[in-house]
Image (cartoon, rainbow, N blue to C red; front, side, top):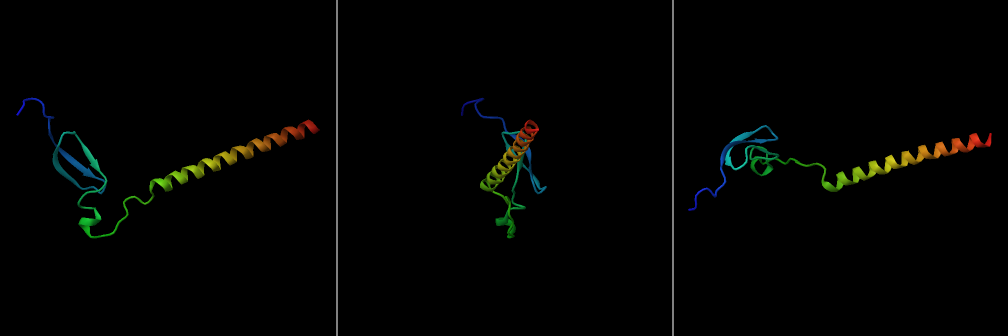
Length: 90
């Protein structure tokens, strides 16, 4: 086997979002995961939603917020325009 070509491995602590942690060997210094064997539905036997909103729903929510903001800007512009025409008429 060739010398000095393999990456250095470290004993690290993997931390899950549920609070569980365990030791493993990896080339990285730290690892954080969202799901582990303590909270995954396959291992626990319980049904749990990990991600309640998907990418499409988040995109649609952002798009709706942008449309709402654009409508408010248009309403402000329209009221300013009508105020200018009223002052010119007087």
